[in-house]
Picture 1 (cartoon, helix red, strand yellow):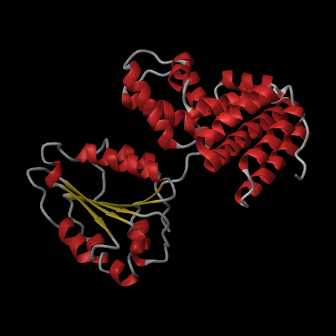
Picture 2 (cartoon, rainbow, N blue to C red; picture 1 turned 90 degrees about the horizontal axis):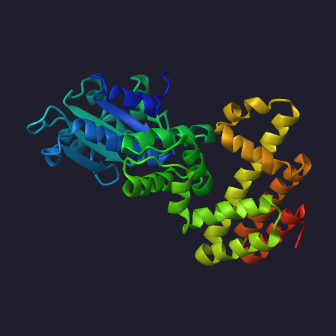
Picture 3 (spheres, rainbow, N blue to C red; picture 1 turned 180 degrees about the vertical axis):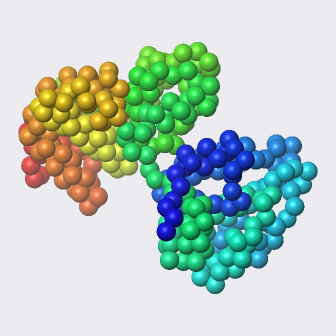
Length: 339
């Protein structure tokens, strides 16, 4: 059975005459899906006639016949047109089977994009598209790929941002591609084609919640409970339980990185840390310095404490009490106990 294509494969095809007449875009990363769809639109559609050559349908609101009629339509004053069908996973088996003859003899002047979240490849439509080699899976980016993605996206925007600034931005914002993209857009608007380094990112982020989370992690690493609690209470005032869960996520990532760095140093693999963890050398050095204040056993216990705090929050416990206790225990170098 054919395997799924990567989003990068589709983007590569945009630069050649090899873009196919139809694709299935599926997977959990909605941002990457929409970003790729936007690039397909820009490549295929002429702005002057785009409104006439783009049709968007929703599978739970539209019959297959309507979609197929649109797919077979001739482009208006252009070489190609795009037909997008969202929520394709909602089609019943009988609906899917109506597309099969079209897949065998598609209109070459149409790019048909079937978009779904989770698909069952035992279903006829999805199985046929994958067999034809036109199923594209959009997975969440792994941590090692986020900084390269930031650099690539910045280049597309014409933003001259340093690798160190990308790493810093990732640390203060987190792994949400939508939020990272938004920050890149703000940097692009503010600095244009001027070089952007860590100081420019700090200036842009100085008043944002993400920057405060970054400060919180720094104060915990420095084991300064007074400053850490001060930042924590500001964050909770801004976002309540949602902010509390986000704080736990950021702390979890930071402590896991510190743990990995310490483990690699103890195995004599310090030079391999940037490549193994997908982080710039300067950030690896900073993690090394922060990690000196922790033992590997402490980090393991604190990760367990984060999981315990997460469970308590999701069970309805008060976020201020849970996180106050967690921050104090981290700063004091004590594993969290039952409260």
